[in-house]
Image 1 (cartoon, one colour):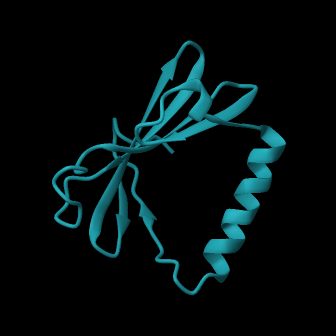
Image 2 (tube, rainbow, N blue to C red; image 1 turned 135 degrees about the horizontal axis):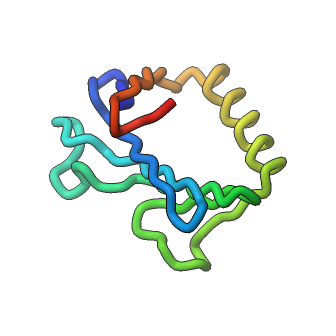
Length: 104
């Protein structure tokens, strides 16, 4: 469960698929989401063991999947960490492990 300013905003579900770890970020059923997106998948990340692939909601075709090798994923992580620590518009989130939903 991921908690933001509006309360419960996201859930992360982790599953294994053909040896890859699949992380799905679902929007919650909270009041801040419009009815058409409540509970839907916002983004999916697939860790194949060799690289990381991710795609946005509705993008499931191979041409829409972005693939990063592990060094590129670390580069992206560093940029995102810098962004969230220096951006005045960033709103902090709290990640709460919930059995069966998010394993940390």
